[in-house]
Amino acid sequence: MSYEPPAPPANLPPEVVDALNESAPERLRDVAAYAEALAEHKDREARLEEEAGDDGVEDQPDDLPDDVPAKATVTIKEINDNRYYYWQWRDGDTVTSKYKGPVNPEEET
Image 1 (cartoon, rainbow, N blue to C red):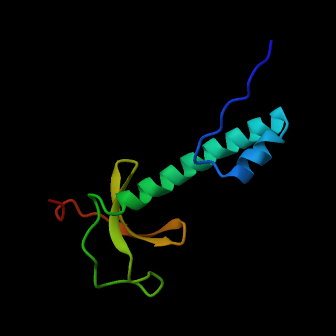
Image 2 (cartoon, helix red, strand yellow):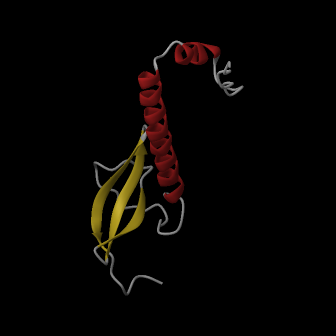
């Protein structure tokens, strides 16, 4: 009885397929776990970037501190049932936040 190896996805580069075909089963399991974790990380980063443009983000403010870039926006984060303003901006692959102050309930609409 002969078993055929699985067919690789068509969009996988040949050098990746070759490297995987030459790998031991334990290495393949490590690669699979790493690939899944990396995919989740990239999905999370994409969601953060998308959320930066969703509700909770205010118009561009004029009172930026010196250490906050001009591209920063203000977002509201809820922590322990309290709401706080944070400056938020993308720095390469990282979303950076800096505390601005508490949200005044009378200001919210």
